[in-house]
Length: 94
Image (cartoon, rainbow, N blue to C red; front, side, top):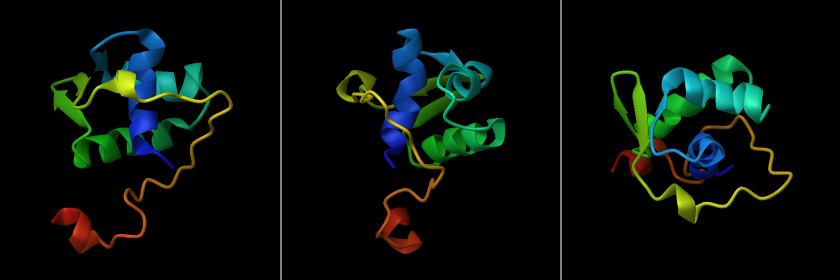
């Protein structure tokens, strides 16, 4: 699963540089139909924790160029937000 693709999708879908938390979650649940609301919230938190999203109040901004991420047709992400699979928690923290 590419967390970058999941995080990029709401910004690409709306063609904006900033979204609210609610817009982010709605995009992943309603627009794309990828997740349930609690799973979309987990994706949001994983994005913040991995440094992919900057959260200021209710506003979210990507911390990478979302234009570099392509969402292939038929892309269906998993709900496994264990980012950087294959690396243990210590390696990810470092």
